[in-house]
Amino acid sequence: MPITVGTAGHVDHGKTWLVRALTGKDTDRLPEERRRGMSIDLGYAPLQLPGGRRASLIDVPGHERFVRAMVAGATGIDLFLLVVDAAEGARPQTHEHLAILRLLGIDRGVVAVTKADAVGGEQLAAVVAAAAELVPQADVVAVSARTGSALDELRSALARAAAAVEERTSEGATRLFVDRAFSLRGIGTVATGTLWSGTIGAGDVLAAEPGGGRVRVRSVEVHDQRVGRADAGQRVAVSLPHVSPAELPRGTALVEPGAYDVTHRLELELTELRPVTAQVTAHHGSAATAARVRRRDGSVQLKLAAPLVAAAGDRVLLRAETTVGAGVVLERKVRAERPVAPPPPRPAPPDDGRVRLPGGAVLEREELERARAAVVAECEQTGTITLGRARDLLGTSRRTAQAILERLDGDKVTLRVGDARRLRRRAE
Image 1 (cartoon, rainbow, N blue to C red):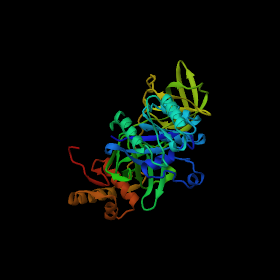
Image 2 (cartoon, helix red, strand yellow):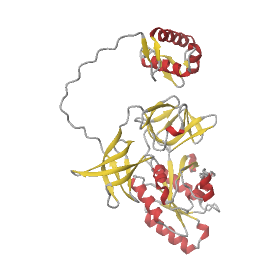
Image 3 (cartoon, helix red, strand yellow):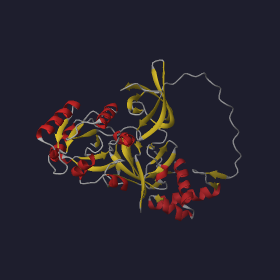
Image 4 (cartoon, rainbow, N blue to C red):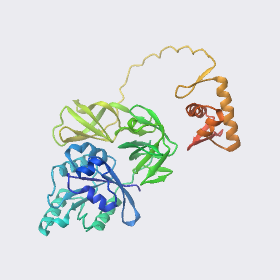
């Protein structure tokens, strides 16, 4: 079963050093992070657990200024790895991160008391005891990233916690919240995130919400290894051709087209840590937006400055200057409306002999029929046809060939299978 572990804890308590000791990977990838010696964005590494199980580990910033990045990393994780400095004990961000985890429903994990080699026995015992009291449901392990002391014990504790996590189901529509998008030479745009539901594989066409633009998945990687299809709960990287990283900012949701509402208004079942003011920042998935809280007739509604892709049961974190609460999204109420007479049908546009294709391209009807015949003949001869072959066969641009193939898909002449098309069988 896929498992994702997220770090949490106060700034400078040794989260990134511990991740490096556990995984052998430095998650501080930005020059500014290396210069300052402080994480300011999300980092990722594969983590090998005892018994052969492999987890995805998300390293989040601890500084108060970067709580937004911490929340983006925390949503979608299965286990927490709460880090507490043996010399300092729990600090303000320790408590806020722990509150965030609880509000997001993440109640399983392990506490690592770091820098155990730097303090005396009495001090270490006192911090371990305080950590056990702070998080009574979690194992507490005193470790040293510098010496490697108790790292195996920590991995074993994580494996035990992972064994108790309820397995996610891959049923339901695909939903992947993007927390990073970047460009790689020879590959193009890559987007990463935790797959919340459904599956994702090469050839899938998804909607990038909000906005609704379509993207096609060229390939999928899990732990830097290409896979045919990834399942819910896995940390994935997807290659997306013909789209720039700027078009996929943090908070974008890659979803099965038409499967989720994109809304400016949510109704919540609210849990308050402290009084929730009228103006808050709402965090959901990897997105954050300003929101106005309205209380009426015993319900709590959020009016969002930017739309979110939310479903019933999702959790939305609310912050003002600090974390003030969270809400569980409720089913949308459908209000009864008076029946309205349908408008009179519009007259059909005159047939001028031209056909509009997906994306706005226009062809003469005879040209489309010739293209249809050529594609059918090629599929009958070779079994399938790729976009590149269609472009060469039809003597058109790649964009026009793509539009023609999508039209033939819609006309149920062809069926897309991965990066190719085949003729659709009658039974389909």
